[in-house]
Every structure is written in structure tokens, then in C-alpha cells.
Image (cartoon, rainbow, N blue to C red):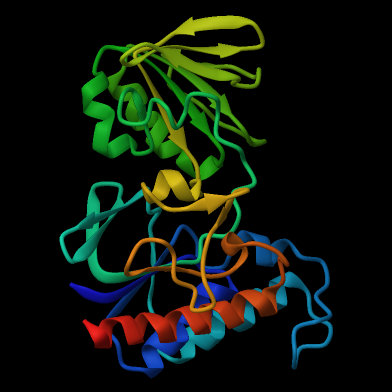
Length: 282
């Protein structure tokens, strides 16, 4: 079991990981990618102290090099759920899980809004993990809503199980090869059903499906952690970066504006130190 689990590889996550290493805590640092996609996309950054005029790529590599020079390891996994189990937390990543006594959420802001019905039917036909739940849909009809090309291996896996797969690729350059896959280029509007998923809607057309797989890099905070207090899409925290759930902290863009790299780095530092204080009191 880890003392601290840090989720996210932006400036907040990097800052928390660096300080966890310096304070000699047993920690795990997890993110879907080595460098936050948002950092790399910035054309110019002029207000990061000590780096007066850098591109997002340059800042991203500086952050990555800092962690690597300290021997800090990043586990490239997508965390789809955080669950409290007694006095610790279990983090779900596909068919893997990790346990930690405290958690720091540095998950940024989800720019892709959930599909209507996505959160309502989670666990009742909506899944975020192909390898976890794919076998339940052998010889059935399913829908896959994918936001990134690197999920195509998972789509092929689902196609090897299901009878029919409707694929909604939300990216360019898709290569969907299986013969039982049908690419739908209309936007996915709604997931509907009763006690479980019955179908999806796309621009007035209804497709009957037995399940929906949503394959994406980020999840809304309330989907990630049930019971987490959120206002206007942001995780509510106090000055010590504590959420309403004892043992869970949050830092960076996910806590609200301003969306600034230096603000995120400072909050990551703060969250880590108060997570350590929380552990010491325990």
C-alpha cells in the first residue's frame, strides 16, 4: 500500500510527485501520458518564474526531465475510479488496482462534456474499460465512443468479442479495420435505456445496443470519485487543498480558475504537504 497516490501529470502532479520524493514518502504517480497534453499545446508561456519565454513543449520537457533526474517513475495508466475502502482508497486502472492511504487529484479540467446518459448508466451498460467488461458483451451489439487513436487496439479487442460494434471516433486519422465494426461519423448525442442501456441516439437516429464503452483520457470528478463535492465543474477545496472527503486532496485546474501553470504547481506543492500532515495525524 502507498502513502499517497497522485493522479495527473500536469504541473500540479509534477510538483506533488517531486515533493513526495523529497519527503521520502511511499507514493505512486499515475497519469494517462508522460506530459500533460494541455501543457504541450501551449504556444508561448510568459509568466512561469525563471522561464520567461518558453513553449508548452519546452516546459513539458523541463518538467519531465526534472522528475526523471530524481528517479521519479510515472505509471502511464488511466484511472477510471477511486473508491474508499475502510481507511484507504482503491484506484482502478483497467484490470489493475492500486491502494493508497491518501489521494491527490491533479486531473485538470475535462474539456469533453459527458454524453447525455453516460454518468446515469455507468455500471448499468456504460463502461470505461474494454478489458474489464468486454467479455460481458460476447456476441452482442455494442457502441464504442473513442476520443483518441491509441484506443484502437481496445476497439479491435471488443470487435473480437461482440457481434456488432458501432464506433464513434472523435479524432482524425482513424483506422478501424474489423469487418463487424461500423464507423459512425455523426455526433453521439445520448445514451438511453431503463434499468440498463438499450441504445444510443445520434442526430435523430437511434441504434439499439446492449452496452456502451466510453474510451477517453479524462473523467469528470464526480464520475472518478463518488460523493466528491463539485461546483461549476470544479472540485471544492479549502486553503489546504482538502476536499470534502477525508484523505482526498485536489490541486491545479480541477480546483478552479485561474488556469495558470504556476498556480497549479503551487497547489500541487500545498496538497502534498497537507497530505503528509494528514498521514502524520493518522
